[in-house]
Image 1: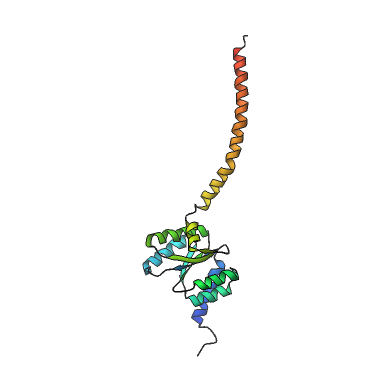
Image 2: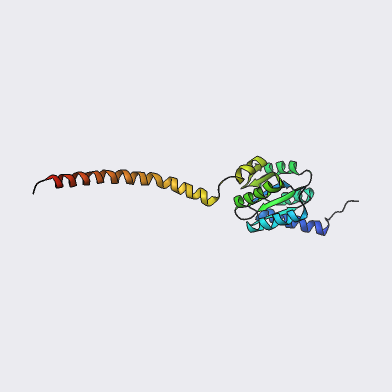
Length: 182
């Protein structure tokens, strides 16, 4: 006989996952099978440093939570539903999503797990290939510094060109002055 109201424990999990989905700037579904309990705890500790979280959740409860959130589009939700097979862990990034992605990627290089299946970053669906590309990008600070240096270099070039012409005039005038007899 089916229950009309969900079990209170399951309702609590759905509310918790919905809250995490609403708070997260990015989230991904990962395959975590094969990781030991200690490895999962180590991963959670390292993710906490970059304002991220990993939560093992049942697919049906994640689907209900996904239905309750307005964080992603209907098309993205349908693609996410298709990926809700086997066992999944949900990876949530609350702060800088790229820092969290890099942290998970570095951990997964060590153990070849967890493997990212699909996710949503800034309301765009991302695949595991997209995740890998994001993980190898330089940090935000390095990208900004590179952009700033690129914007400054034409200004320095113009400054040096203009300055060189003035220097040539000064050198010529100085040579003329030095050659003139008093």
